[in-house]
Image (cartoon, rainbow, N blue to C red; front, side, top):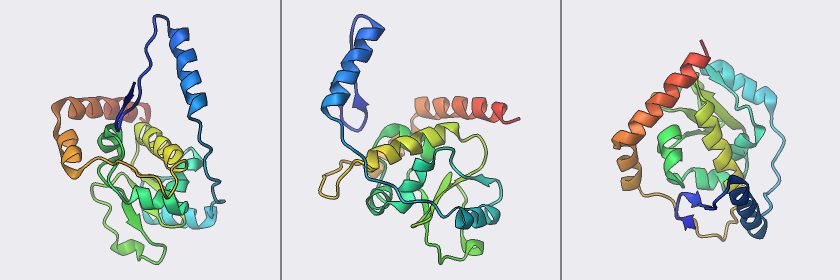
Length: 182
């Protein structure tokens, strides 16, 4: 079963059988991802100094959200799936390298996409955020410019942000992550 804007659901009587079925399906739909560009680590380090408490993602593929032209175009749209809204927010802060860092308002944002440069994470306790961004990067690197991508609507996003179950789940995950950083 493929649930729109959620993903693949596999069912079996035994966990190993479910894993085998999943691997079979994934082998049938495998799409190679586009190559990513090398990072300008010097420029990224400069941005880290501008945004207090910021960090770079653990997985370099996350930077493709800002350095791959097609991925950046998709990242500027609304999110593709509910978990992204819950853990990353409705939209990233997207800036250009020519923007003055002193004039950038990061209030309420969890990460920054610097066009053509990379991604900066804002604040501590960002394991779930990184997992969601890594997933988004892996997906977006496989989407062709000619593909019709069905993103969530703004109404979907606002409903998720205010849904009591997601607010509770997000709070629990943030509490666990924040404890691990102390």
